[in-house]
Image 1 (spheres, rainbow, N blue to C red):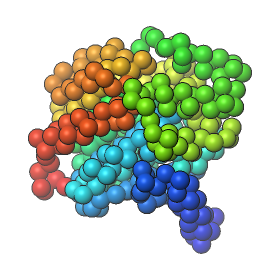
Image 2: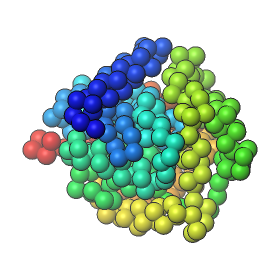
Image 3: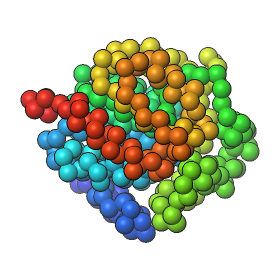
Length: 315
């Protein structure tokens, strides 16, 4: 592809992203950006001063950068806030012949961060974003300054909720997730304790409006490793073994305690790995913690960032 073709393709991509967000622009008023990964174009939000220390927000399944809209708005005045749509998610391309393995999501994130030359990063991670973001962090610990975890994991555990397990069943899983949008639809009620407004629900669901566009939701579920024979098992073991090198960095954990998927068992796993982490346990919040508890989670994050401010010469 020549340079002119590449520019045309990027502009078409960005135009489509702008049009796609019009129905919920009141909730998601950000300019789109495009990164060309090896298997497709990735959309990301990039707000705030370019020379400020970045917050890098990585979502999970079945959400997208929309999940971090309040974080972006709250901190874009003083931070560079980058919120990525993993390939197959949100406004990013949704290739049908890509692996959708954790290892490859990590590769995409590494490539994006290096292309933007982000340094002194504060990682803000949720759900699969924990494994993806920590996969980046253990490869590039020198680029990570602080870490914020919320209802996520980057280590193996010998349990899987029945509601997730049935989504892995042959035939049934594909029909439920890709045919009926069962995963994303269910998340709009089962991942929160406080009902979403119709506008917010529309924002969460908008990118996942067809069989084609729901491929990542199904593939993420299939990529959960439940035994050593699964190709992602060793990847997560490797990430987990590298977490110790991050233990000296400032780490905050904000956790929705009514999460039926990422339960307190996962929180205990993080506490064991990062015993000095600052922990906010939110008793009345579910999996989508930034939806249920932004009134307390945003001040907690601001306080954490201020108490662990980066030295001026490190920005």
